[in-house]
Image 1 (spheres, rainbow, N blue to C red):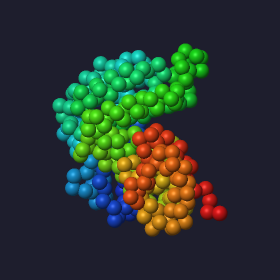
Image 2 (cartoon, helix red, strand yellow):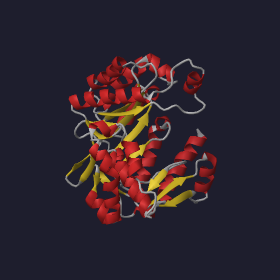
Image 3 (cartoon, rainbow, N blue to C red):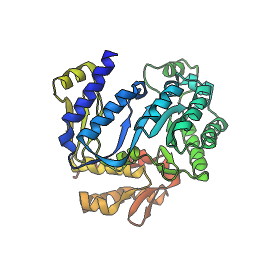
Image 4 (spheres, helix red, strand yellow):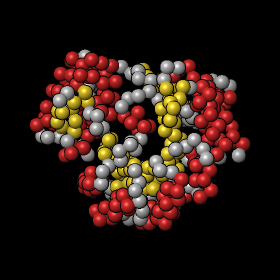
Length: 352
């Protein structure tokens, strides 16, 4: 308990210490993520939000999201959150099938996943869930059932990701022992296209590669990140971006607490070159419905960058993986799943 109180106090102190970095920026979204923020008490959530309001200019109706796992969201917890400024939930459902959840070593079961959403909808309208595809042995039909369960529940926002296998996990051990098949890119691509079809059919916009939203429910947090807006990350390992520099906090909780308690910031800074910023814009732009503006490329980075981009994109344009919509370079449906790989081929490695 004391540790949690100390961490919350440190987060609030870091918010204060960094207030001068964003004097001219209006806070449009506050996002509680990066772990298990739902373990915080209501008073602690309010304490952090109050610190933001005290030291920053905040928009009139900011999006305030809390990430949570189904096993954290009890009826009591949901009722408490309903009395807080939090107005959006992002719930890590992952799957509505027991076998998938066991394979991914999730703490909740399929029944809890469903019950959690039904209970959350009693209090919240703006809800997002995560769904994972490309799971070994997941058939197209089972993946389709997952998607349509979310649609039936009238979830207005869905974030969906291909399964990744992390080191030192039960899943990796099972794969190495041959107990389950390896993760298959072709399976993931098949699942992604099933997802695209279902989302389009039911009125969801694929505004970013992994994110689908009904009108009025695009995540402001996600949109800000993918459109290159400034953001400030508070807490151990948190990342920040001011348009020209990236920064990240120390990733050790004890060292973080000690430094903040001494009113010292331990942030490593990376100055982004023009090439870095061009590459990041290409990567993020290509993943979104906003695409890559050739006019912006020329104005912000120079005509050489625009010429280079069009030259690198020429084969993808011929192969109908990219297309030009007026001034904007976009991925086609065929190219969407390959967008990160395409973007890497559009990167500029040097100016020589």
